[in-house]
Length: 612
Image 1: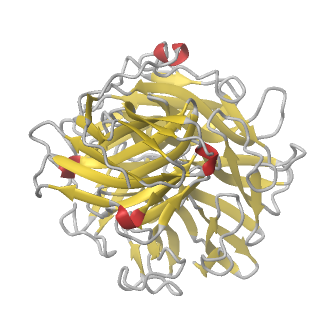
Image 2: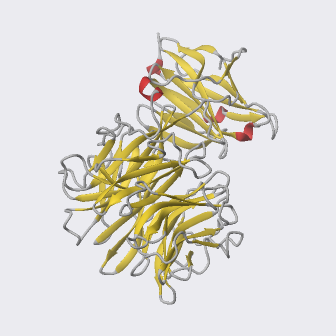
Image 3: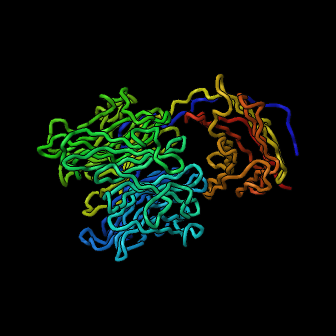
């Protein structure tokens, strides 16, 4: 093994964006995405049927996974299926996934999708929903491989079902950092009527019997929560401390409310939050309830633990019209007085028209703390996607769209989900819901993409790579020492991840990522799209691509102490015959716990000797 005794220390630098991204305007529809800003997936290959998206998730490679409901025709309400589709990062349908880019699955006569998530550990795709038939209603969990096939290692042949009674429904899902899957929904109990349901499954698909206390029949390890009315859970979020937040609507007599419950990581109501774990908020007294009354429809937890809940508030009780509504809560459940007016905000997309309905179904928090909501605006049968962005104090962000608001044409009708997609250093908003391409007269799974923000690169420390220049023979191990030093007063525990990649022009032959939280390494092969996650330094395993090998037995992670400003990774690498005679650039990058990314910095070169 060769060792070299000189180092290259480089500061993080600003990466130039291409012309389109440099001129991006926050809130502008990204016409380079899909078909002039929209991507569509029909229920079947013939483009027939009816479908709408209810959830979108972003893979690590930027591809978009969308889930929704579908049926053979818009007029056929006797049966429905769950539809899963995947788009390439640029909005074209990924035909390598499932059957020409989609998977259609039925678990009962009527199937309703609730959410989709991508497991960060291995990229597998988890879908949640519920199915109804002659035997009643059951929750449904299904896990798919990255190719779109059911994962036989999960549940029974990739599927988990469990009865939740007539009137039951699943509305939301989240995956914990340990891989456990949390579902939120509604069950009907004889004594109290509809109540919140919370249940958790292990990564294997087995019910987590350590979760909750007395739950719903057939789900004894679950939690039901009563707010005293007709209670329906709509959304779910997990805080950084493991607490679980569920939001929804409660209707009693002639009024309806935002309701929020917070649970401990073990599934018990958190008594440090609100009144015995519950909070109720009224925007408008004596509203009509139902589809126009006050309702919390989306929830997110900020990095500081504050909870943002979005939905609708009835604003004209004579006409039963609605405005988008937001509320922010402190960690103890009280309304945050620094947000909006007394912790609450309402937004009318067309302030002068009392007959317009404005609803927000989803929320996402940008890395800078700004809040993005997505939903719809319009009159009955004439809705459009509506997206609004707010500053951290609850005021509309006038740098976004038209005074903080964006609408689309009828290609997007109702948005049910929103997520952030990274494109180079650009942050994009992907919004999924119901819509249709021009001149198509049935609904399809629909995604629109909007410009949101450009990452401002700040100094997140310096890099050192030793050797800075090297020559190696095929199969010869070359040991790299990759160090990252943060500026005071930070230390290396403020690191989120380090990444080293080997690149030949646009061809990345090996990308190695170290995750500080788990202390594990993963390798990614750009050519195949395959990743190998979760390997510890010192393991006898190898992380391989078709061109290079990382020998984990010789890998190490060192720091001079618990508050050290520096962490060093030792990475023994070997190069395969396909690299003979080629020269490569070694690039490094870091991301800290606040989400600040350094961008890749060229830190060295290596030339593989020609084979003789």
